[in-house]
Amino acid sequence: PARDEMRLEAVMAALSDPLRIGIVRKLLLESVDFDHTCTWFELDRPKSSLTHHFRALREAGLIRQRQYGPSRRNQVRIEDLEARFPGLLALIADWRPASV
Image (cartoon, rainbow, N blue to C red):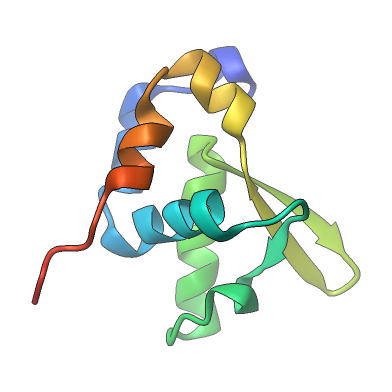
């Protein structure tokens, strides 16, 4: 969605899954100047499951995906999220998974 069409409830729903918030957090904290493919995350999940999770993040407006040949590359929409929901990315960066 465009910046002004991003909905807080959609963003929060996408972030409610620990795997998805972990994906956004990893992009925020470990990403360099370029975007990353799904394999960069080293997630032990079936491709169909990962497709679902990345689609949820994209449709909520948390990430941008770009097609490069056969792979999609992911990037957090930092400027849009900071403008629309100030402080949200800092909360995500500070998030830690619950201990099992």
